[in-house]
Length: 225
Image (tube, rainbow, N blue to C red; front, side, top):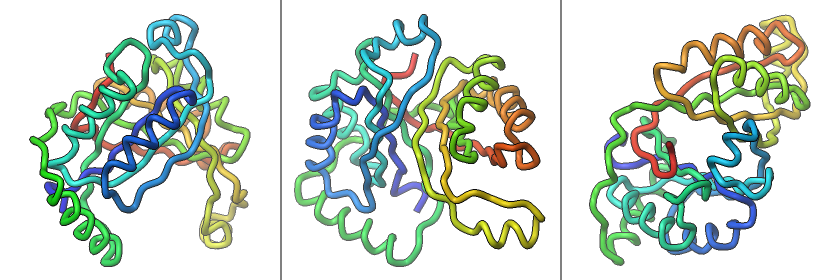
C-alpha cells in the first residue's frame, strides 16, 4: 500500500481554485476534497512566495504513486506551481487504508491506467516534513506565533470539527471543544523538533488551546524553496 498510493496536498492562492479543480477532475482520485484556508508568513516570505492574498485553496487527495509526476506536470501547466509564489504541492506516504477506501483507490487506479500511467514522481529524499497541529478554534494564532518564533517560515490554517470529545473528557479529565483549527506547516526535517517543541509548549493538551501536534515525512514536492 505505501508504495502504490500517495496522500497528496496542494496549497495555492484562492484565485487558483478553478484551475486546481480542473486539474483534479482530470484524475480519477478517491477520496479527494477541496476546501479553503488562510496562510500565514512574514512579509518577506509572502513576497518570496508571491502570494497575492492570504486566502488559500487546499486540495487533498489520494493518488496512485505512478501518477504523481504527471499530476505535478499538470499543476505546472495550469498553475505554474514551480514558479515563485504560485503555491506548493507535496506527498506523504500512505501506509494503510480501510477496506472500502482501498477498494475505491483500486477502482480509480484501473480507470487511470486506461489513460496511461506517467513516470514515477521525483523523490524528495525526506528533506522536509509536514507538521500538523490541531487546536481549539481560535487558537491557531498561538500556533503561528510559536512556529514563527522557532524558525518556521509560514503555514496554512483550515477549520475542522473534532470528534471524540466525550472520550477525551472521560480519560483525560479535560473538556474538548468540537470546532478545531488545523495548522499545516512544511519545514526542513532538521527544524522539525524545535518547531514542534515550541508549538507543544505554547499550545499543548494542557493549555487553553488543547492542542496535539504530529509530523509526517514529505517524500516528493514542487514549489518548495
